[in-house]
Length: 282
Image (cartoon, rainbow, N blue to C red; front, side, top):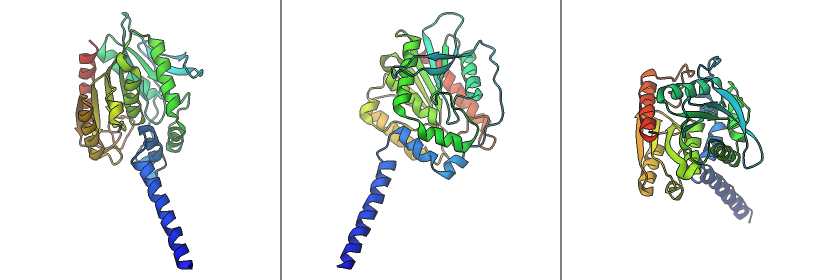
């Protein structure tokens, strides 16, 4: 009898473990997957501490607040074109938060694209860090419902006539794709830098914009298998995906990543990004 009892306990424990693994690996959303990554010490160690940088805008960039449908105001870093245009780029931060590197990247896009307005969205509601443990905690604490509300608030801020492109890196790469879904018919273009794709084909069928996916072949978190699955899902959904994969690791396009930054790959990826946005936001 005791042996039977122990066998039952063993079976239940293993069933629970496998169920938890199935939940965290197979059936979670992109946001939940990043929350799982954040608890992994190797994932945290793969993000080099960003160097110090203070951004001073040359184009009149400024922080603003805007209303969200959940009743909580959000923050954004805005650069507006001197000549009025309905073209907007929504920029999404890495896991560090809306730091000065994201503001600098926003300004580079503004200068190189022309004829666009930029808004970098603060998805952490004011929290920003250069410490990996804090960044991991912020990413784990992030709620997608709040993220969706921020995007909807930004869409209301830019107006119903705005044509919206999105771009993000790492955590922000996944948010870029989700924001394109939220933007609906206002979506014009989506760029993902090594972000977690949406797995749900039914959701992908709702996309109204082409996607440029920029990934790293050596990425242990969002690697070639994940990218191949994304490509298959996009084909099944009948949506266009342009893939650019580089022989680099996760975070290769971040100049503050002293260990993993790859200048040539970053330059090529950025040139592809600018060309993509110019073609879609004429």
